[in-house]
Image (cartoon, rainbow, N blue to C red):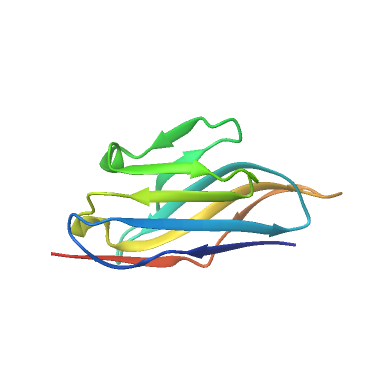
Length: 120
């Protein structure tokens, strides 16, 4: 019904930047909250940043001042600008969206994940 496709991960040196993108498609009536999570090896998945349709944002303390989440004009896309990257930011980053589908229920959807690796 709904697919989330991420792009933009890669290998970068500490102090560098990356920009992640995520686009939602399918039988969408509206996309509500969109968010980015990450999961490092041996650790639990954690919230990195979230944004509502109205533009309210929330960030994990560990990324405040370095990462910026934003929505595209179409509201079905979300971006995460990662600046001043640290080795501890290395993880698989997942896009998450709270979606109301056409003639159907509201559900949570996940992307397939994109790897971000920060080298020292």
